[in-house]
Length: 93
Image (cartoon, rainbow, N blue to C red; front, side, top):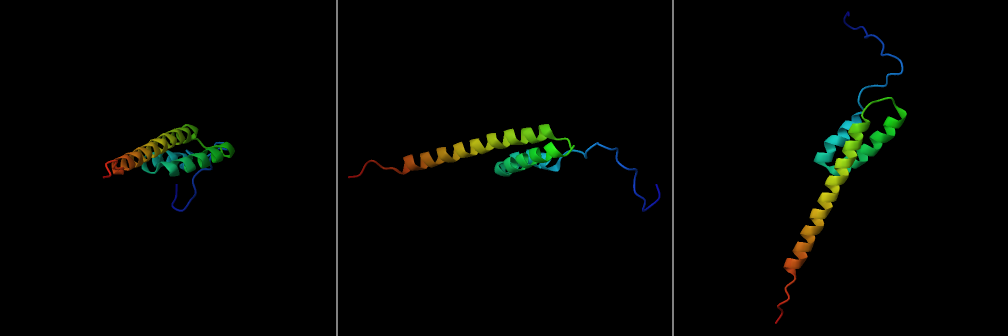
């Protein structure tokens, strides 16, 4: 193909490739889970209207993001309870 020419047209009805938000949802599930939740829901909304692929990526991004967010919140609550329990001194004299 000569320099500066466009490639052949894409086939009709074949939506793009994989949805970028679905990929980012899976990546952010491990980096910053709340952002993965938002990106996963946005990806699922886009996937309903476009012909792109990535439904499973968005689903796994959402599942892992919710799991990691839950574990993070559980760890924070446990740490807070431990700090309050260790800080309460019941030996006032």
